[in-house]
Image (cartoon, rainbow over all chains, first blue to last red; front, side, top):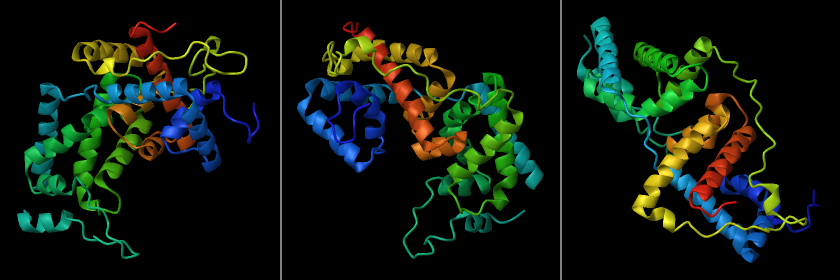
Length: 85
Length: 222
């Protein structure tokens, strides 16, 4: 493991990337991350690929209610209404 | 039968300011909740639809099958309706709802929930792609713009689905809740009862593997 003051290497960058995107890196580490990024087109590319992966995953459709499930939830609601009357 | 006006008055958030006087964000579900309480079935169904995917994914992380997860979601809505009078808006409706779901899933759950290791040792990128000093030897190729092409994106969607299926279950659960259902890191870690740091580790492993799967699909991976 490299020391705190040494520059990050690419292999470390790919492991820190989620903490970076989540805003969870300590300030000093964040500065080292961004310093490496500014000088490394490959890691910049890798970061863009991670962002693209997140974006594409976000396009997956969340699970929709099936008509049968909808009918069951409506029945739950009607039973509740009947109980509350 | 209580009058409609009174019911609406009960459910509309009474404390719109926090103790420190700062304005409090209005619960985005308050209006639908008020209408559901007042007897509007469609409003209830909108709430059900809004949280269905999140609830299923969350329940599935505690129980052993999709069918049981569906039962947990249904039981949760029964409990929510019965408990509506006690919901005072101290937390958001979403937080309250997911707490009830997790409690019910836990008591139903047959899966050993905490036994799954958080960090597997698999690196985000295979070691062979770096030189001895840790610099890229086989760097990522450029393909992110290509992924916006409609046909390519359709193929990638399949790749992502397959990639998700192949993930260890804890990684998949966190990834679905975060990146498909849009929950925050804090919401996911609270709901699953894991630290935010562990939540990030699972997210990191999952996202890294999905990226690798996409890279392979784009034909330029190694």
